[in-house]
Picture 1 (spheres, rainbow, N blue to C red):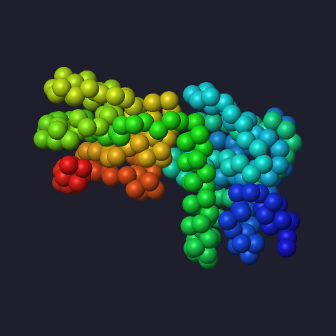
Picture 2: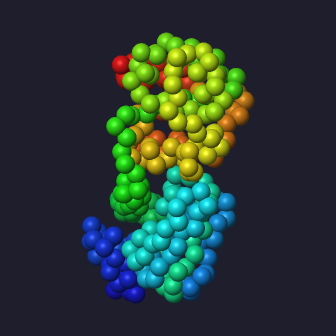
Picture 3: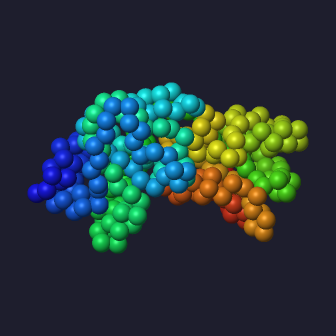
Amino acid sequence: MDQKTELLLKLDIFREFYTEEVELISEYFSIHKFFDLQVIMPQTGQDSSFGIILSGEVSIIDDQMENSSRTKGDILGEMAFIQVGRRADFVAASNGAIAIMTFDDIEKLKLKQPYLAVKLISLVTRNLVNDLRQKNKKSSTEMIVLLADYNLFSDLLNLVKDHLHIIKNFSIVTTEKLKTFLEATTDLTISQVIEPQCLILGETAIGSQILLDQVKAIFYLRDAVTIESNPPSFEALSRLCDLQQVLFATNLLTANAVFQYLE
């Protein structure tokens, strides 16, 4: 048994894995030492890796959220699975070591050991959900998210009017422009406003609410000819909905079908 396998087996996070499975997974991790105040896994704008702390402590510095720290067995960078780009900096609060796996290595693992790749990704995402649940209280009212490209605002309005009796059973989340538009043309009350460029991460974003199963459905009417929405943000939203099995409609036909399901 090599050193990487021994180090990973010492972590509680791998208690559901057989020794032979950890041995296979360890081939795709690289071990890196870090020193106090060193920036770990620097931001690149296209973050494509995650890490598991083997020893030491790491501070998470985020100017939009409360700072926190992580220690042995904790995961860093797991939000990269659902969001392109990262706001937070990871700064070492002591000397230590971290095991890092790139997304390219995950793809290689998928090809050779698909079951293990799924098991590992499930472990990472489950860890993320548990972390969010510790920080958030579950809302008693489920949410519906209403979004649309600008030239489809009228289509969204007609959709809302047709299904107003269903929509009123949920808390409504939308953008500032749509909030003004919808409240001026219907008697809806908007519960939460989000930024179209920051759908997943940030103080007003809905990423954590999706992971906490607080979002029932998302309606995002998009112009298939001239896409004006932020592609990375939309892609992250789409992947997160797939991950959490959230109803996600991007055209009128699908949207009407979803409302029939919700009725």
